[in-house]
Image 1 (cartoon, rainbow, N blue to C red):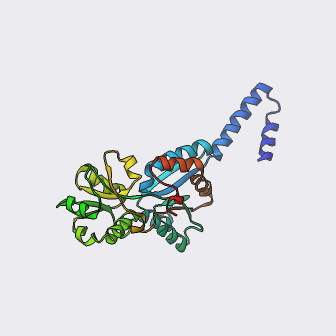
Image 2 (tube, one colour):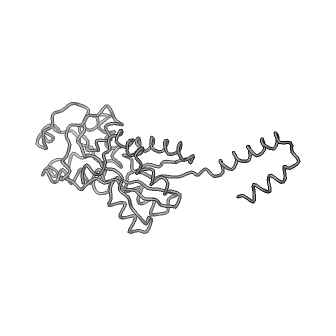
Image 3 (tube, rainbow, N blue to C red):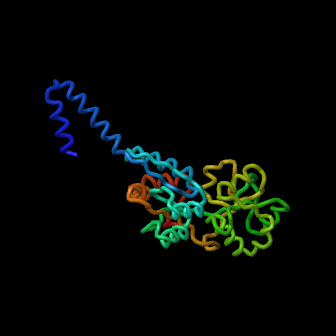
Length: 260
């Protein structure tokens, strides 16, 4: 780099100082533009709003651009394992992150947040327990993310099994590709209740939290991420920063220490 600068200055020796300064300033600006990177981050759908804010702050501080790609954690993990052009990956549970580790797609996994699992609805229905949920459900639907693959769906099914009502409500469960898509059913009135994260309610203010599942009724919710390429290291470091953790808290996520 220094040799390039020296050669450039020699070429402009005959130019008067004012013009030389202008040329060098333009050249430095061009170098800065070339040095800016574009990072691609694949992430769980439930992170959409919080991560948009975090990415903007990261861009301001680093000068790099961030492209965000959202889907269910299961879809994100499979895409990354198949070679999707991600520099970093952020998932809504540790199982899919560990799967990427086993597949050799990443070399290290880092937890960065947790969440609460809740029953949501459009109406302020009183639900003190699962008996109330079943009674108020009637012949309506309860919306969930895919219960065999998507973290929010797996957590929800596990909680309903723990409470002994899964077999009762299973015929009325409508499944969606991700947790946000599931809660849209409730938002539109196509389902009376939904199971999602507390953080979803910050982004979907027309819905209300009706019941919060105890953490011991389902697998621990551990949002986990990893760098996929060396370029992703800076973003993974930033997601652990005080600024990023504060943004996550504003969007309804919780620090891991709360449930550890």
